[in-house]
Length: 170
Image (cartoon, rainbow, N blue to C red; front, top):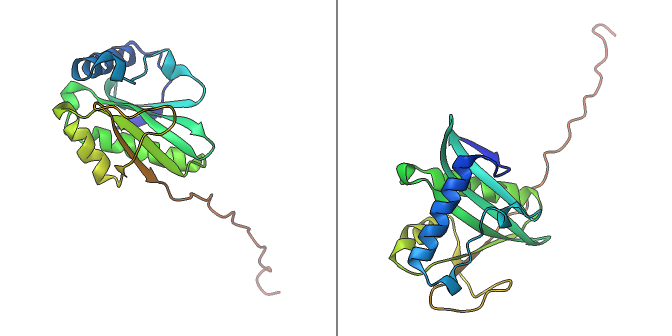
């Protein structure tokens, strides 16, 4: 599996995002769907990732910077043919690592509340996300489940200084 920062230009990415939006609208009332479409995901504050196996798209996920230290997970979706193969776990790991390297100290998310979202709830709980209240511009509603977790600080590896050794026999 290869996970990349994606520019959203591949037709397979557009198709997966359309599947994602259709699933969100099928599971929640339109006024309670906060999923972003392809053009909204191209905003500069959003980093969009895709997972591939060769030329086969396995899944996607993104994070949106809310401020210098807080980001929101967006558009987590595994392609239907690759469910329960660990795709979402790998994407979520990549999001956490990339966000932490950019100085994010808290990751939050909004997801649905129906049965269609139970697998997502389990995934986020497994990764240490805990229930929280609404954040950013969200409001409480019966179709939204809010979760958040702190991220550890990621410090760059220390630079190694090579010290010259005296020549043999000196």
